[in-house]
Length: 458
Image (cartoon, rainbow, N blue to C red; front, side, top):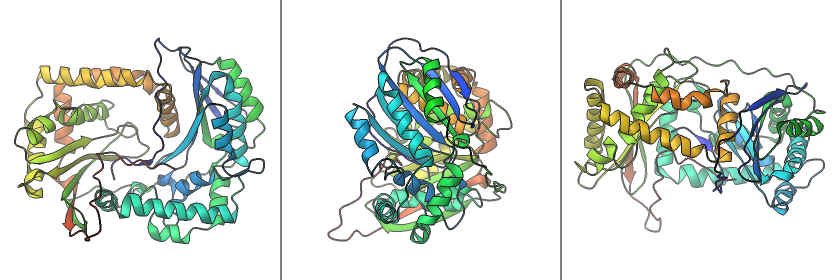
């Protein structure tokens, strides 16, 4: 599956106009890490609480439990009735939601800057005092099952992506879907959630991030007031299985009702946490943008508009994960062209990068686009906080956010070629092909999601 997280909402961009202040860090006595980034461009803030728990922590038999627990976090505590959390935030002019990924579960509130105490009071209460009643559990479990049916089982490309992940990885927990396998969802019990909640939803397993029109000392004082009394938990992260080296290309065919065929290809690649050379993940990110960085990139220019072998073709890579991942390609062939032709066209583009240096002009153009997009994202308070929370939660130094643009800017054409030669090799490739089956007469064709559009609202 392309980098997966069950994400949330359409967010109003919390945008501003001047340079923000540096990040200030503090840790409470109970282990809660706090990161505060003042940004006084508008009287608003985003508050996010990140837990070091997600699908990659789950073992066989309980897959999907982290996402289901995320649902349950809105179903009441000892103090607040189900859905009262959302009502209180809305009455104070804010928005809230949550998302679950492979490596984290996070909750957020976007509020006026004088309402931070409301977010802290609510989040501190449900960090340790969730009710997790049987009635609410049974209801939310059915909601998740239906979500899985709609977003995976009834979506042929998502289904192909799920089966692809299960084949691409041998033992890595990334082989399991965030939403869980159907058989595991059938087995989950409220008692399983209570134990999962007790083990992982603790201050010493969380990072609190606040970005916006705030004073760090006031944030720390409020955090101490609301989160300080909470007790730490003994945290014992599971041992990570070591993914063995892949020793040959893997292929699978997924048969499902669909209107058009689809191919998904992935090569095993490192991330910042385990790369042999520190520059390699940034060179891989530049490579993805060279191939698929907008209408002027190679895939759009040569596969979609040029040869017209593909109706769509995409490439993606994420440098920031807890575990090693995949460099991904996907495509839908255009009419009168086959899956074999579009796959061969992608392979030809890979071979070209491996044998020809990207020109100085093309690299400069792509670099400018990538860096401009990154700088624009920094105008959003939510994105700034998400970047800090994600880095801290997957075990990286949050200061990498400050050096990201410089690391991209330093990538050379030779480095792009080097990572293509080293990592995009046939023995490390997995290919999944969607073989369309006839649609039922009364069944509409499912909408094709864009590459990476794996979001799921609560």
